[in-house]
Image (cartoon, rainbow, N blue to C red):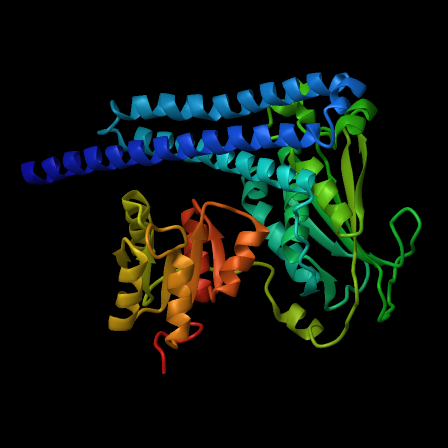
Length: 452
């Protein structure tokens, strides 16, 4: 009994030390990234000329306001993280309090990650480096995925979420699925955030022109280009005309205490509208205080195709049942960071997977050649031989197992480099456990584990 108590205490101290180390590393990296990106944003807004600041005297004030808001957005979650880390030292024997505090720490870290992602997207759009990857995709599948992403928070608030197909959507349209999904999730998450009771209604239809000019293609199956229109209606707090006018400006929520208290970075809607324009469309809004809001997004469809998917769609359930697991999967982790290897190893084992970890690319190559694995997680920035070179070597040797590239640098260019080197997919770190498990279960075993 005494031995068990000693083990529990020792385990608690070890967990606390790991949590301390991981949290401070995460906070430090995110603050550094955020500061660098904000600096980059300010520089981009000063180019194309020094005279621009003199011509537009209000720009300096806008930059100062943006930096002040960024400081607030960073300091708030960091203060909570630091405070709860101190409290955890006194809560090692109170499991309930421990779990509540670690959950709060994770929530604040997630907010920081979201903030960094939004700032990076804004910086890419400002610099004109966003790569739009148009491909043939199922629009209904993307909409379902977006609804699934916001469903847990909607359920927590007891909100109904309904999807209404007002016209017969085509089986395939040509657009960037990642950016379309990002826009839809931003709009739907915004609706959930500002709705306390009632419902969120997602109306989708195909039109032959923008919503203000076009007509619906109800009952028609025309093989031509058009616009995918999605209206997200909520029964939330609504907005005044002045708030609507300011809505798509970066950090617009900073001007309103009521909206600021509900969270968010104030960048999501601005980014969404700019992405919609890159996809050949736009976003508009109608709103009334106390009644709710309706966001209307439209994007160009590109070439439209019909046939073959209707029956499959009807047979699909709206949501997947059961959480994915890694039982039976043999996973190799290659990362020079000890803490990163430890976190990934624990996540994989907790999900039922078998994991082997190595600290350099040479060891990863040797491990694949000597052992049997179903999938590899490969850090692309390791000292000596890098992860992409290791992947090329494996492909040249005939090994076909999936290799997931891991990188902290999120960009379309990096993703293309990873795919060109032979990687199956590219994942941005850090990853939540659910995202990691989903990624590994999705790709594990798809190519076979050995050359042959």
